[in-house]
Image (cartoon, rainbow, N blue to C red; front, side, top):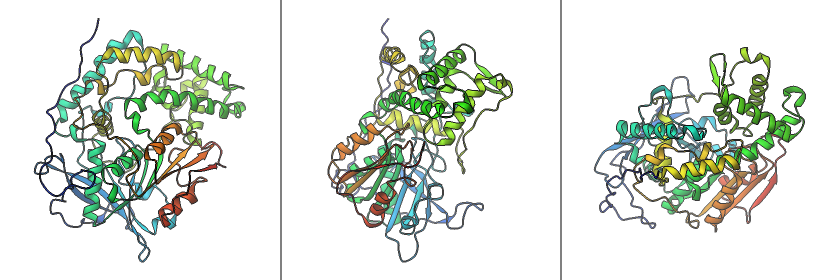
Length: 491
């Protein structure tokens, strides 16, 4: 039986007709509401003295600057006196990730940090900025659901409930948690800092945010580095579905790594053997989950853990250890691997998921035909055995209201220059995204490709470092795309 269209509709966005003259792109400039320079203070007693924090006020709805304003938390590590050339805004990715501590946690070369005030910020809706919540509590909400044809109606009900709860809890904020509005916030940060232009370093989702900023504010864009690139034409369902493709590619690379260490982990002596070991284990866990020291592993949990392989050697080791223990008798006493928790968290427990959904569902419309998700999941189950139809399965965005603005089209490079950095084997944002973004940006953009590297967040620490550092320090964009080969194995 055919299902009805399930999308909701919000009132059409009001056009901007007041304030000041528009920028060259047609994007209105919003004054910083009379706020003076940021009131900097030490971020926390246990943080370095030179790590300063402040709050910037921005309109919730840039079409109604006379309405509600919200807080954006920003941070700073100042440049060396006498060598400063400007500010470098930084974003670690997501969507949904805080970036306030990035000036501390991202160790840039001294030649860069001594010339720029490093500016971190929690994007709107996230962390120490005015946070958004879906009221999901400690459950933390949603991640792609492992597809089971017999349970598809349950998946539909589950994701619809999440969407409805989000909008029942915070319909005042969620419509405005979008990439375009975050780019506008960056421009207000620029104004408040008293800068004519900003330079920018963004990773993963931060590359899409940076690309959108250059489209909306080209004259305010200085030196722009986009590291580990999102394909702007796949935002956002297309990027989620791409995870299945990446998982196949990444697992084969991981399997080669495991073959070299078969004496340690016993997963197989050939890539097909490791793949079959993994697939058989997943099938068993789908039928009968295993509880280990209070942690229950089903096939879905292991698939999600495995999706991050290849980023770091430690993640490969953690997965190999987990698989070895799940396959062995000692599983009854094994400990579940864990990843480090980022510091300085001020937000509700479901804040990251709520912000993630705000951006992913609010940047571009997802299909509203439930049967399309079912067809796609059945097809992808055959195509991609490692993740099956998980990434094509129904998502809360199917039940989200229509976005208030169209997705930003990346067409030509309107900024003075952009440098893309990309690892060839990145398992989070595949190289095809960087290739497409480079083609879309065209003039005055270059790609530094690191062959043989898995690293997500390639700079610094790889063979392209000199190219990126010269660009940030001296503004030297390569005359053509650059390719170098990583000498660091498995990162």
